[in-house]
Length: 275
Image (cartoon, rainbow, N blue to C red; front, top):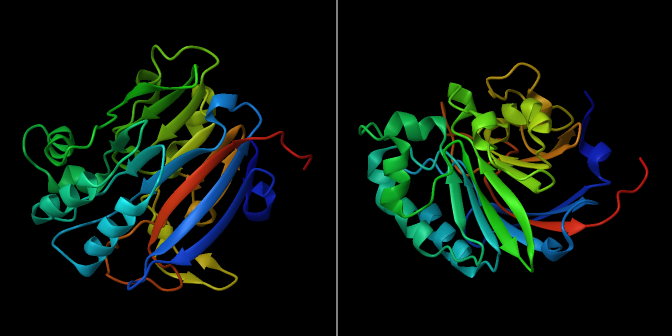
């Protein structure tokens, strides 16, 4: 197994960021390069939200609605933990209402979604209520310019509810595969499932990061997926992973050198440079 972090993935990833007006949230823009991306998907733009942890209306929700409405993306991906309490459901719905993308808007559930939404159907009922399609250990196929890409989603890996083999059942061989998961720990199984890109959150970037040290803690729930995988781009074998710092917090409402994040990613078809 080959794991690469930071500058070691510069050949396939580059990042830049800017602060959203009136709040502490950063807009991180990520460019990812894949030699096997179908030409019709060259330039694909993905808007990504993770770990909203919304319990009530806040100024951040207003900023997120404004930012989301202003984005011109081809696809929206929401990687779990949208709720911190049931009173947040109307606020999540406000954000979803302004999501627009020609290829659709999709989500996966996180551990907090299971904890907070305790009605019998659980997260499927939650995401249906807010109007966001849920990929619950399943997949969909995106078509553009005569080419196809498989978008795969698993239930929360942190609670061991993910079933990646089931999620990829029926996916045609040779399709470029994008995986959405709440926790990045699933990355160690993703290569065997033919995944090329993983989008995840859950770690909040560690919430507390120190210069030259990075995240003090990252609870992925999977051995080997530790502090160096808490945020940003890394790769495991053929899988390029991007982990968002997300919006909210858990345990303590504190972030240090780890601002909340919204993300746009652009995928490019480009031959990989020699390492």
